[in-house]
Amino acid sequence: MKSWATIAIALSAGLFAAAPAGAQSGDGWIQLFDGKSLGAGWEQAGETNWRVEDGAIVADKRTSKGAAHLVSKNSYKDFQLHIEFWASDNANSGIFMRCQDPKAITDRSCYEANIFDQRKDPTYGTGGVVYFAEVDPMPKAGGKWNTYEITAKGRQITVTLNGQKTVDFRNGLFVEGPITLQHGDGVIKFRKVAIKPL
Image (cartoon, rainbow, N blue to C red; front, side, top):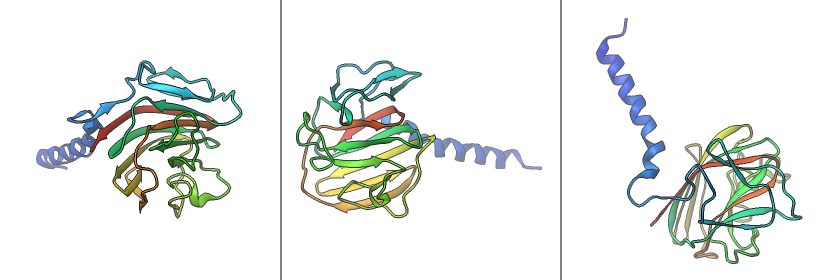
């Protein structure tokens, strides 16, 4: 039989393990999504059926020829970014950062932390930064909630997916710009989108 002290220690460990999930509401963190509406902080590029359902931003029916994006109205240089997302197995999505032109968003003019389990070239699939940092092996994100934690400070960019670092690289091509949430194909949902400028 376990003693009360052992149970108390186990419970305390569980509480401390869960604490980081709420850490993005502390000092310096800016909530980019309130769980209720897209608000005034985003602009749209391309067309899809962005909407809010059950506390999450959802898209599943793209109507424009290219990918659609929710683009932050503010520009960011050095930051920590926390995003929780759910992707279908066939989803093509990503988090674009330091975009150079908010009207013409591509993976050649932004850093893209990819969400694309079925990408033909998996070296730049989920967890990688397209054209800049390969991921090996590529983790799978389809069919579950996942957490991206991205840090950009100067030339150093680090991407962590579900607590595991997937890429860590140096590149100074893009210095500052807005952040976007992409919908290219399949179903994508975003909840808890928070940024902390550094």
